[in-house]
Image (cartoon, rainbow, N blue to C red; front, top):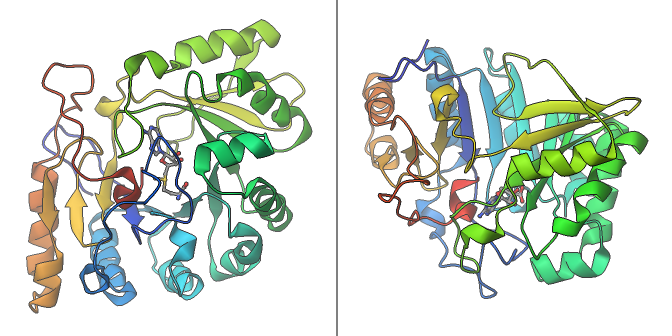
Length: 327
Ligand code: SAM
């Protein structure tokens, strides 16, 4: 088992497989994109698999693939098939914007993927274009339907709630849970990314979202599972799906943080909001043995901060864009 210096048990690895993305969400990226990591600096699938084997041997049991947009990287299905063969991974999931999901859902399921989180901030076609600078709402929706068909479940829809962008859609997203077995998760707008300037006043706190939903109908708490993340879970009476509230800004859940992140260029990040990174790529490429790589992992764990500093005067927006960390 892996523990950090604050005695938190670390069992969750989020792997960003690429920094490339096929959308340009305004709050995440500028229109022209961001400088890309050169191809030769991006870990190969073989390199990632080697690291995952080591991490799993040390106590990681939950793996999520993210990006950039993970489905734009070639060879993802085969990579998922290889990952799913690693004994000890109990939960293998993917975070995607859903644009390519219709084509991949079935083969990913067959390759061993358990479930997907799909990012979708609006249910309106025109607004989708305004937010992401690309057409694609219908494609994403088809992706969601296909994920439901092949049962990549529980299927979670992640909605970043931003005042003045989509705050008038809180209730319509919740309404979906009556019709479909989807978990709608509202996520607070975080001060990261290279998109439009972040302003505190644009955050819709989960407290505010919860109060709005409760005006519609009572929210029934859902007991959480040990593999659950930081979401507070609820459901409406008679609904097929669930509601999740995630408050990285207002609800400091660092005390329960169980995560490590691996960036596309082979750096271990121990906190989404800290720029401290431990490089493993140079070790992988300089012929390091498993013991040496394991030492790097343990060294990274030692640097995991007790908590993020978003709400303190010491906070500095992180240097790396969200699209190359993976959120
Ligand atoms: N392309 C994939 C996707 O869209 O799900 C994975 C990477 S994307 C960076 C992961 C998540 O981070 C998305 O749900 C996105 O909305 C979210 N995100 C990006 N910038 C954010 C911010 N400033 N605050 C909150 N969430 C953010």
